[in-house]
Length: 303
Image (cartoon, rainbow, N blue to C red; front, side):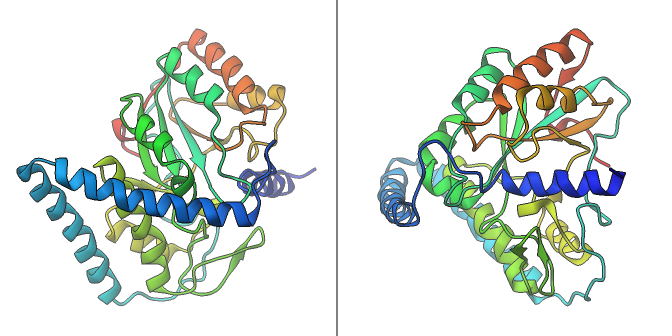
């Protein structure tokens, strides 16, 4: 099989990580009902949080929120040109840490959706017990069903919370699709796909994400520029760690051990029935023995 065919298959598998059926199947009706309940609970929780928040803290919170809303309006008012590029690796997409040090960045996606809203507690527990840093890219759909989990993870300094989009769409200023998923199709949709979840994450965690990864990790170069104007860097990867949570344990370990100094690995934390956790355990321990350490994206310049 040629190199292009291998890359094609791996990217198909990444997309499958957001749709693979979990042990306990979540039906569309259950998802809808759960989302309604969570939104009602979020509204109630927000009212209680506003009551408890000190006045100075609330002023700062409201200022940041207003700045995010203003930024979205300003970017929507700008004029951007169409783009002929559309892939995982268009200009501006970051795939590595700019360093020759033996460091690696783990990035874990949580895609959400009907069959992608699980939580791999075994994987995250292993990282915590072994003091392993990771950047967690969470989608708004996953947040709606896992808000308590997100709050817990956001409080742990081993993890940063990053933006994986609102509807898990590829980003394009004109209609396209990647791996069967329709992209955004306008400047306004791009802004909404980024900023709706940006604001959601801020409301829950009190931190504004610095990095963004789209659903399917596909972009046109115009959307990458829009993302940068919205204050986030677009981050993909150079190591596909779990093939969308479809790899067997041995395959996960094998792929992760292909890292070089500065590699960024993509994994998934929303498919607890997968072999991802077991493969990561073996690979992480082996990489530590080889002298690698695990860092956050924000500790190095990206390239």
